[in-house]
Length: 255
Ligand SMILES: [Mg+2]
Picture (cartoon, rainbow, N blue to C red):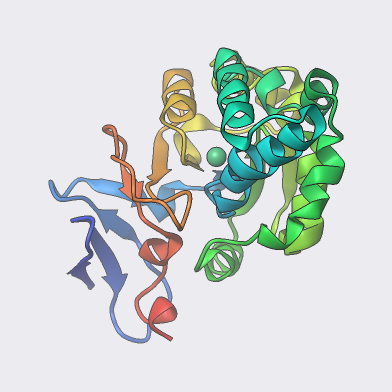
């Protein structure tokens, strides 16, 4: 028997009968299933904004880098910020935009060192560890799939200790394409063979989700609150969650 509860996103979550740990369905307002866990054998999970709080990245690129850049060029902080935002926007969504080495060269700053200066801000989103544990208990394969540069991935896994919950981590820089390109998923098949019909992909970026959808990944979820200190975003037509408590069996997130 499955009972239903609502949450503030209007999503209805299927929960098991008391005593059962086998949760089956998550339902949307129109009562079509968002996720049928029985159909899922692989989880592909984004890192920044999905498993981890995007506050670190937003603070780093919008506050910390402009501060250091302003110091280096003796610029007013606002002017430095404006210049940098324009430069970010020019290559947004490309592999270079995510590349630590690219920005180190472009800006004359050691981006990896700067990240280490504010690494205390790196944090795991609420309920992620419970979710990963629940998925492992269900026997799902869990693979991190990120556009982040290898140096960022290394720093974040070291800081958060999430590596122990993952079966693998795939870095877009190793494949030579960002997730925004539908061809990325073909490349991913070469290192992580998967059945798109039996795969759930969770990400906070609508352009990345659109690319996964174009490739044919059947189960998609958008994280609506990638930065815990910023307002929630619109779902943009994707099935969505605010946080991972919405994917947990009843009671787990109420502890
Ligand atoms: Mg992301």
